[in-house]
Image: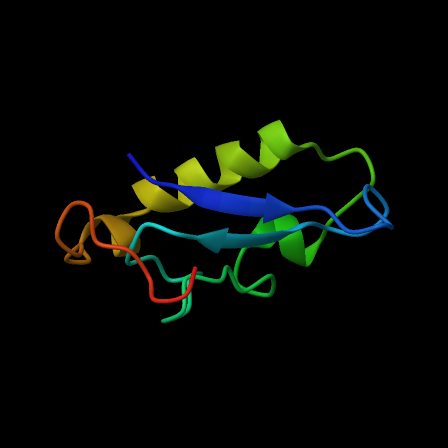
Length: 84
């Protein structure tokens, strides 16, 4: 189980929300601080007004199942990023 924060700005849904994991996770689209790089997550990179938080969560789950991410060693269960 992972904890994350999805922050919608004043221009949402016109502009994509920002995402930051509290729980440590190794994914190609997540930085060393837990922030999701919008350029590395296809749905955020091509954000459209019609997309929803649900579609965003589905995209994150899809990323977790990609072969290159499944192979990554994961941090110990329960570890969190500093200053979440």
